[in-house]
Length: 414
Ligand code: EPZ
Image 1: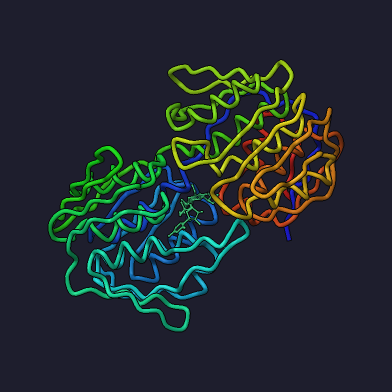
Image 2: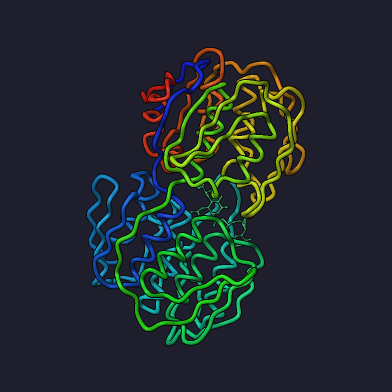
């Protein structure tokens, strides 16, 4: 099993171009099923989860060619509506294929996704949304069997601002007769990107206050589209600059996607500057302690919680990080303790007493963002850090070590 070996203590310096958004790519790739024909999608990150989604699309009948971040996908003949457990079990977002298959074929037989390291991650909101649209849901042998004779518009209220729940209902409702209104929907940038892509294919979706309104259409046209930058990757690098006392420039990232994180980093004492080509992140002064509470967009993103927790282990005082979105998203904490961090857990909060430096150690990644947090801690720690189970990191980051090396980090994959 591959590892990262990091020699810490070197500030990140220089300029780097990041990849397209993983969490925008997954629903947009699934959405190509809704418009038969050839789609060309640019700036698709070549990482684990995207490769899984491509495998699933091929299993339904799509023909794909993925070269140098451009995916050509032909969804003319989609014949198979059954997606096996083996494909769904490695990535929960695979369940997005259900909404796309319901929209395209009026049926989907998709394995119920399991839980994962960060929590149980139910799909009740997805299923209730499908049923409201006139889809019959049965569950047998771990499979969700969804069938419908005709999709009709509905009034849907989401109990949780679920990202893939919102996306799945969007995918299933574009052809539903009449109007569908989804209230309490997730507003993350990747949900907005999916709406943009669907509308570019001819869907009629608009946001109105806390609802999205979908007016059913007859058919959609295949399109050429470019995936937006990954704000989770950008956020990870911004924290990388802060934790190593660095000075980096991130090319072509969308400032508006990172507003909550930038506000938090500025509160901590990090200099974040915008210019027309990107964002500059520099940390000269001490790291000030603060409180962080994750929340649905526009709140502080849960996907950056492990990374900012790592940063706050070096703050000049005590910080509190509260994770409201997932019941088990603190798996990075025992590993950070092994590096000398002083963190106590109290229910959904981590109480972090800042220390002057972390020390390199052998640690283990448990999910994408926990793994990223350990990389950042290793970049700052005194001595050598070895991170195992980096396949978790590869699911969500493309060539992380190469990008960090261009910024002067001493990190290698062994
Ligand atoms: C998406 O997961 C992201 N994944 C996650 O990113 C991200 O952490 C999460 O949204 C929150 O922003 C993708 O976009 C592919 P949710 P998702 O449904 O949609 C509860 C990463 O590292 N909930 O928004 O599965 C749920 O338990 C990954 O890139 C219900 O109760 O998350 C959680 O507490 C990790 N019922 C909260 O909502 C439901 O039907 C948010 O979950 C659905 C969700």
